[in-house]
Structure formats: C-alpha cells, structure tokens
Image (cartoon, rainbow, N blue to C red; front, side, top):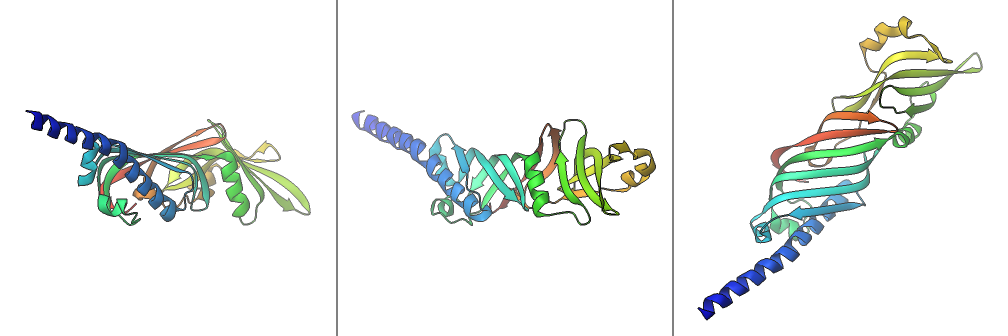
Length: 234
C-alpha cells in the first residue's frame, strides 16, 4: 500500500509538473514560428490542454493566438485573434524550435483594419490619376475622398458606398458620386453597379485563413475568417 501511494504521488507530481511546463514551452515554440515566418513582433500564444501530459502525444484542446499589430500584403492590421481547435501537432519538431513543424487544426480568425491604417496604405500605394486619396469609415456609408486637377484647378471628388469582401480582398462598392459636394449618383448609377472602383489585397494570412465576412464601424473594419481542418505548416 505504501509503495502504491508513492507511485501515485510521483505520477501526480509529474502530471502537475507537465501542466506547469509543457503548455508554456509549446506556446513559446509557436510564437517563435509565427514571428519568423510572418514577421510578427507582438505575438502571444496560450495553449490549453488537460491533462497537459497529452501534449507529448501531439494533442491540444485549444490554442489562442493574439497579435497586437502585423502587416499582411502591405496592409497594417490590428488586434489579430486566432482560435485553433482540433489541434494535432508535431510536438517534437515544435519543441525543438523547428519553425516548419506540421499541425492539423481548424479554427476562427478575427482582426481589425483601422481608418488610419487604410489611409497609410494608400499613401504608400497611390491610385493612378488621383491625388490625396483618403477613406472615412462609418457604420452605414463610408467615403473615399480624392482630388483631381482640371484646367489647373483642384476639384474635390467623393465616392460614397460600402466595403465588402471580394475574393479575399477588401473592395469598395460605390453608391453615390459627388463633385464639390454635389451628388451625381443618378448619372453614374449603372457604372457603379458594374464593378468595384477600389480594391485592396490583404494578402495571405496565417494557417490558410479564408475570410468570410466583415463589419464596418466608426473608423474601423472588423474581419472574420475560418481555418479549415487540414494538416499544414503555420
């Protein structure tokens, strides 16, 4: 009986030690992989596994990833949150800090692009033929403002419309066109319906994320995506 008690005590201590150490070690390895592969600086990973000893078999209950800011396709994003489920990981490679470890996972993704971030992007990537392009985000109707020079005079232009997703890119669908605050929407309505006047490629996201929806609010756009269940690298 005394020997059995000692064995149970040792096993309990080993499991408690694993619970304290293994999730943190694996989280640090995942942080390193994300930092090196995606050039992220502000990365935090939390690993949930109980009992944690099963991490040694490559199984995790859940993983949460937080990134304060990053850049995808030259577009700055903020508050990136990734939740991974159904995780099966090559834990030996991961713990050895091999950034090319394989992982089977599914999950969800959420991040934000601010009005300032979009305007900074447009400064670095100007639209041909237009000057001083700026975006004003609103929950209802957003505005893309610009200027053109006609006969030596600057004319203020404004497209009013809504942002949407188009093949994984951020697209602006105009609903009204204004010159010096005068609406010309009725004259150009057919052209508006024909296509998108402004499209911004967000770029490839971690874990083969596919964006499926967005919400526009005051000064910000929130994006939502899913991660399919498959085996791949980070």
